[in-house]
Length: 302
Image (cartoon, rainbow, N blue to C red; front, side, top):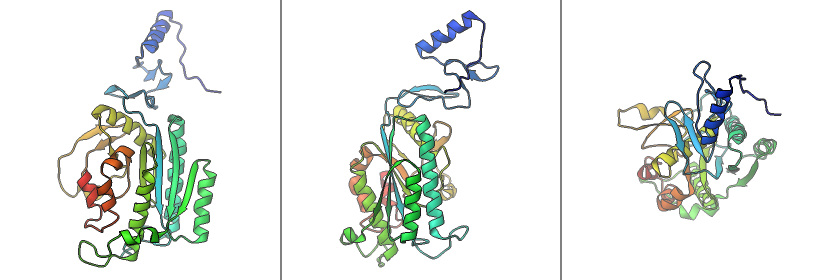
């Protein structure tokens, strides 16, 4: 049973005014206690209605013209390789499967949380794994099964892409086997994205997500895409190296967080099927030729 938060009022005129505001689609705030009687919510709760309107203070309401219908999360995992270049250790110095498990678990929890706020958005999980042991694959599978979410676990076949990848990189050096594995996994992710209908979240297996990460990204996508009338690329990670130099930017208000415009990311980002189709050749070039930096084709798109 849903718990009602409605605060009682004996003033018939006030009741009538609240009903009238609700009928006309307005939100009103009781500044004594920051309660919103038209929505029966407190000001610190999520006020936005997916697919209809985005609400936050102090900017008010934005009508949603770009509704999010579905999200495919494509996770690239490889628990057999500790680091891509192997020239340094990971923070905490644990086995790679620990990072993979915690990362996937945080995504699953974030998706379940998002379903409370965006129940009509169809969310599917795909894990593309390369060369993990049978024991580690079982750990990943159990995580996915226990989530009660729609998922698939695929084993990457590098031979499917080896002929497409140039063996000499931009530095005229031999491409390492680890990098070939990484590029093959990205290649497979892009091919799968062709089958998706709306948003795709490409993510590596070493990112811990906040509980509200997916919720924030989806609400923010609807809001900013509706404001700008453009499809987006969203990167949920704030990379420290982007603060190493002063550069012009733009700041956007999302659902609960501020977002800023950037020109560089790594290979974890959320975007739409339309963006993937529009820049297909550039996306594909990232996994057929090793650039320096590796993400150069992404930066060209940005």
